Image 1: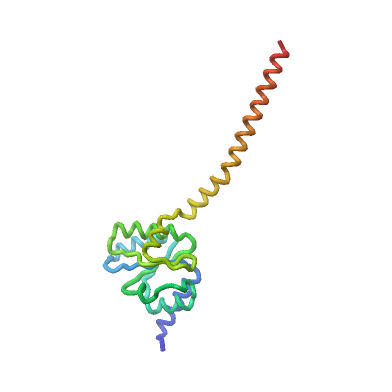
Image 2: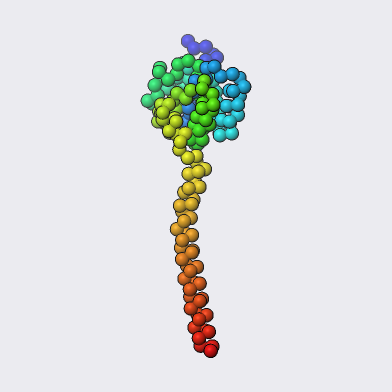
Length: 175
């Protein structure tokens, strides 16, 4: 029979998974408190919550939530793990973790879940290379705005040509 503490912890993990179904699993063994605090601050700015988890309890919560059906619990959740839970902008969080891992070799990206799909460490690094949500929206806006800008420029040129034509006819008739 599970202890009250583990039951409460499982409920907390389930609630976090419900609100933040996308997450990245990291191993943090050897990082000092200052480094983890800096990482938490950077992740908070990117919209993520970084939490050290109890592997068995988190596995149970993850299985019950159904967030990732093909997640390899036994091989992934070994040793001291911390998880960066995020909502929609997984690439931004993956970038923060990847950049931090470059500076601190003791942080290891092991796996991730995005839109109910499991990704291994290579997949998480590939996600980090994706543009952020804001960058994608800016690119989309630029693509949508481009035809309108071209049409406006073309119409402006037609109107300007018409005005020049009328002016030249007026000057010719006025002489």
